[in-house]
Image 1 (cartoon, rainbow, N blue to C red):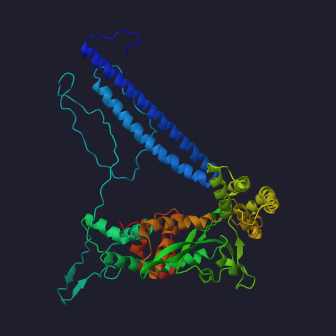
Image 2: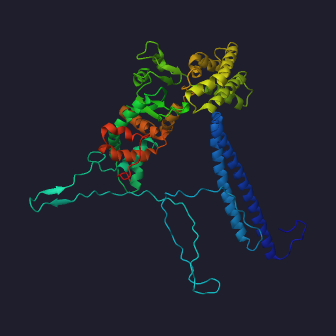
Image 3: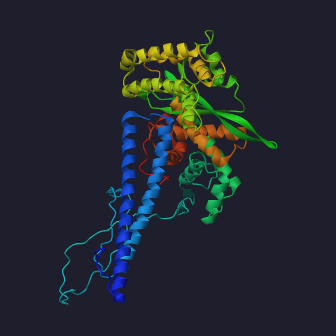
Length: 537
């Protein structure tokens, strides 16, 4: 660029080149600014994720902040790419200007996975030397540029051919027996069935939307046909559901929770309930595999958890739902359940008050500091719990009594002292009463290393249903709710064991008809090994 005090030339072409050079410099500066902003956002997001991995999730606000940071990074990266391309375009238009186009520094990516197939497209090399024109060329090597590409889903029809043979002596016709179909007289292969089921219950895509998408791809599968396939799969997979249910209630401790499920009724929708019980022994160093079992009911009466937990006599980690109360009574057979309350539920009541009050533009309420103080004290207990997560039960119990017990005792003294000063109509007083009236259940984790501080395991299991409600709106019937509970059980248990639900379902559907009934446990997600060759492929 020319110095600011130098006289401008009178030549038009020179002026044009100066203008182009100035535009190129401005575009380059804009691209550098966008790149810097994107890099700062990327580093902030990376730091926040590292803190979350080290110390765990600190609050609901931090969870929302992480989502906002990811969205901000997405927008800044897109803007930086636009400015970079604009800078390159302007610099190219400047012709011989010495300004170089800005190149944004992007994080180095990992190589593409080795299991992906490679398609080689060879660009023909020169036949003569570009320098002297000689045709005596010898290959020195090659440069390979890899580009990730997606191939649209392909459909195929598998033909199973059974040859017939006739005997020259007795003229009897011989033929190999027909292989079993996944479903009787079924025309759908196991991979297709697994895809339909997983799309409906794992990705929350109703069958009518699936049918429309398949039709656009040239395959006409009616809604009734898809429904028949889903019903057949549910019947076929029910033995695995029963095995998972038995495994869940064989644990020393289960997490329990429920969520509303709209159910279609005559001229309206009723509110049913989806119940979940999760067994996860990993927080206290257990080696048994995690699993989740779902149930469905038309209402939320206490009769349903009594039926679900009939015969179970361990620890129930749950919220303060009154329907569980009869399970804790001394006369319950075979034995009363041990109640363990959820500190996340209690903390959330304070957090909402503190969060809303601190964000309000009006003058803060007088009770806001109490809610904030309660959150701070509870967070200190959570910090101790994060450090011992995954340790054996005995070690967890010893460290809890050493480090967490004094914090819990101070919290109780503080809450009881502050509670007497508050009106019974105060929201903070209600949040305190929620804990103080159930203090024995909240402090039981100080007497048993197997008990968790929260019921988050059950809440995470129900998250998919909460997301799905926005997609499928309601269940079609009570039978549909029961079928959904079965499928959610299989899919969520596969996820808990780090198994791809769709791949597992495809392989299991291909093998279950020929599998020995006494050895069905080998098909459970934590025991499953893919067959080397099956129709699912």
